[in-house]
Amino acid sequence: MDELTLAVASQRAYLISLRRTPLFEDFYLEITAKVSLCQSEDQYGLLLRAADEWNYYRWVMTCDGRTRLERVQQGAFVVVQDWIESPRILPGALAENRLAVWMFGKEMRFFINDLEIFSARDPVWSEGVVGVFVRAAGEPPLTVSFDDLQVWSLDRTQIPTSTPVPAAP
Image (cartoon, rainbow, N blue to C red; front, side, top):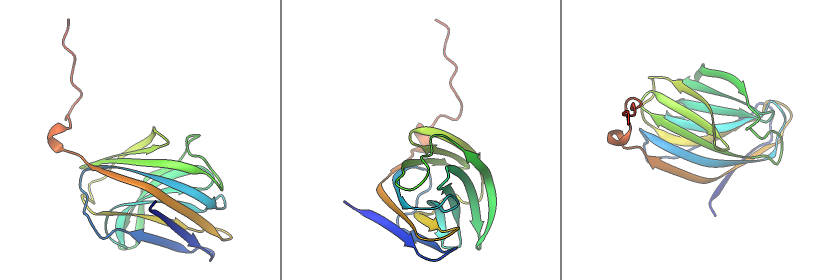
C-alpha cells in the first residue's frame, strides 16, 4: 500500500510533494485524501500541470468543506474558480474524500466523491506533473494522507468536440 502523508506542525506552514515524472497533458486523475487532523481553515489538495514548485494549478479543499481552483505563477496566485461549498465534501478531521480531475486542453472538470463540483477553463498550463499539498491556516497540527492515485491518459481522437444530436427514428 503506497500512501503519502503530509503533516505540518507550524502555523501557516505550507508543504508540497510533486512527482518528477511523467508529464501529463490531457488526463483523468483520481486520488483519495484522508484527513487525520485539521481545523476549519486548513487546506489540502492537488497540484496539477505543475512545471515546478512555483508554477501550477492548485485545487484547494478546506477542512470546513469548501473548494476552489487557483493558478500559481512564479509563486503568486490568481483565482480561476472562487470558493464553492458543497455537501459532497466531507469536512473535518477523519474525513475521507475521493478527488477526481478531468483535464483536456483548456477544459477542466473537478469531482468530489463521484459528483462534478465545478468546471473551469484556463489556457495557461497545458502539461506538467501532479502533486499534493497541505497548508495549516490556524493552530497546527494538520495531517492529510493521499492514497490510491490513478491517472489515465485521454485520447484526443476519442473525445467529441460537441454533443452529438440524435437522429430522428
